[in-house]
Image 1 (cartoon, rainbow, N blue to C red):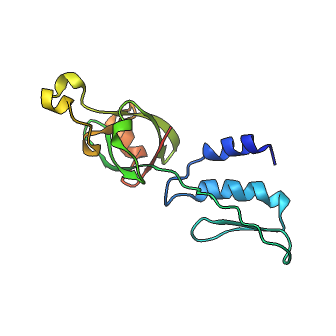
Image 2 (tube, rainbow, N blue to C red):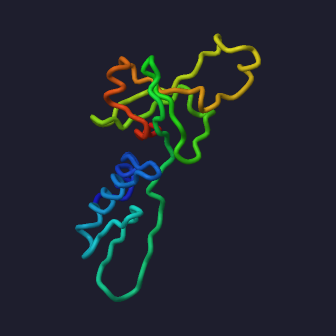
Image 3 (cartoon, rainbow, N blue to C red):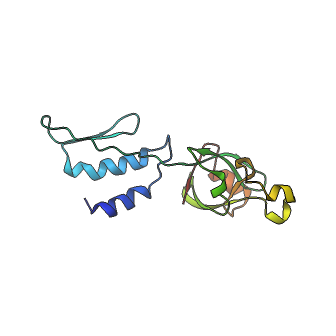
Length: 157
């Protein structure tokens, strides 16, 4: 195993949205396999590693999952509407880079919103609502519809 800082940097870069922790669980299990006699991943994506059958027990616990987004609708202009996965605050999202985990692999997108000059004076004073935001992948609608479907995970970059 590499040093702890490198290990943590590597596994935190792996997709692991709540309900979709499999890729990060597998990476953690793979890191422990050379060090342990038995490593398994259970139905809830918990990684259980064992050294021997007797002796003291030590439990190391941490969340594998992360907050993120999930595609809900592909609009006619190719923008992706989404919902939150976990406690995502919509105020942090406009202008954020995201990773859309498409059917052909991860692709970059940017979260957009109606620009301030097109908002009413009253709306400019309010926070953005999640349903008013979208992901722009910079692709034609036909291509977005090939790659992204409702339920596609979208990770914060």
